[in-house]
Image (cartoon, rainbow, N blue to C red; front, side):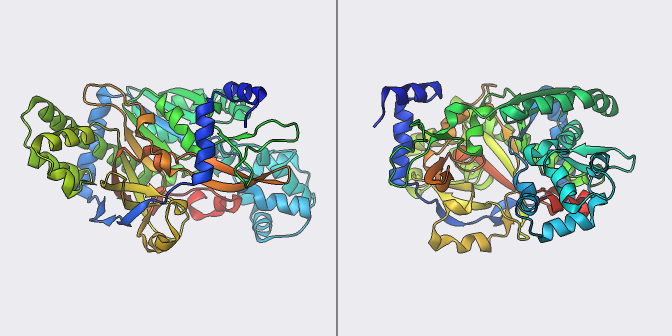
Length: 485
């Protein structure tokens, strides 16, 4: 199937022949659906926090930061092409659409309006104006979302999504005056991010009395997956070379795994709010982190007791099932005390994540569910629609909450040793999609999503957070929503 040239190309990509053969086998066999038991709801997998508890948890987190390294992880490699898709259609095809009409009617409300007016002469045609937004001029159609101006402030200044993350980081992720933020970016955009940071670093450090430690990485080529023809044979381009494709955000588990921090906040690049609306975001980030550090302390205490032989096994079992939301099959509980101790010890010895969940108001995205693994253990999982069988699709519409990607991760065991996140991925939770290259149909394979199968074997807690913490920008006119003005 593979030539010597193919083998060299595979090796140059950082992959092994065995890995590529496994990917092709996945195409042939497909991926199984998750065994969903029910959606998670408040009181049944999703925790609601009252005001008194909220302040206690925030205080717990703030106290814990004195001895911990905290980092913010922001996937930011996506280009803004989809955000401006309707503008491209107008320029390329000449047909008016509702998005362009809305942009024209509200042009001066966009944070980038002032920069646009510097480029486009007065009296320019609508096509020239739109062309200047996406093409020569602002070039937003070729830039990542992180470099697009999102918000205008009364002072007359405007901020990009990247800058809003700098500000957020100063408000909840500063430890000893240092704010650590890691952005995953595309290679072609890295210099643009660096230039922007260097131009604003002094201003934000002075304003928030912090020092920024900003790092960046690219999605590793070794996480790419081979493309195949519809008959599952390797897809080759016109020159006869194999085609490898980025395998989705699940590949970023490798980048996340490279970060040495005790607590890692994960949030997407486009989910930011202006300062006037950041209050709930800051509050609930600290609440989630407070739940993380207080739960970790219990995990460490129970793990130590199991190791030392002083644990009340029934109490540990209740903690695992009721607080960590990991339900063991009766067959495991009946294996005897020593076997149960070993099972409980293994379950406690895993990375921990606390995930905010927003009330479902029709926004797209995965949701919180109870799912049963191959071992019979039922646990909390974030599931996308592609992971749910047609017979269970109604569970998506019936779910009371959805996943806004608001996650806080605990990365180390009680001895301070960092977990290897690659050991906690469920490889059976990838998915296959139909794509094209040069007009030819191909099948592409995505790795288990970063907050889906890539974290399937983490201990997971769900917490209700308000819709005010979720304000993503998917299309350009989202910038006109009240929460972004």
